[in-house]
Image 1 (cartoon, rainbow, N blue to C red):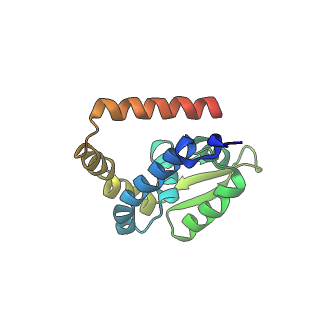
Image 2 (cartoon, rainbow, N blue to C red):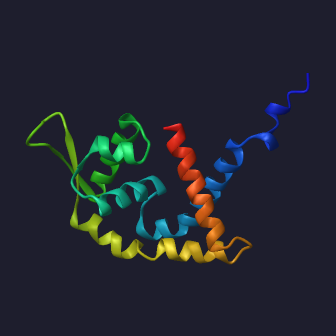
Length: 145
């Protein structure tokens, strides 16, 4: 039996995984300047868009389990980027709120996407191809979730 289905070159998952890792690597110098990791950056982006939301909403938006995101949020709280507050309506819910420090990082981070997009466009991929790729990946994510 040949097992072609197990060859790395025949996998969809590997180029997606490799591209993700390489893109995150490009983010790292900018995130290092902010003193945050890529997962922390993702949490901050969710909160910059919707501050004061439950942990479950952040986990859902980032497609993470709450047991994965809870230690991340605790670490970010110790860094004084956010605070965790029990909901007054339902004390089982924990609401995540940006601190001033977390809010101020938004201004420092606002150029990161543009800078990284410019790097990508220096290559052989144009804006329309990147948009199509993002749309295809979003569609794939929607199908898998």
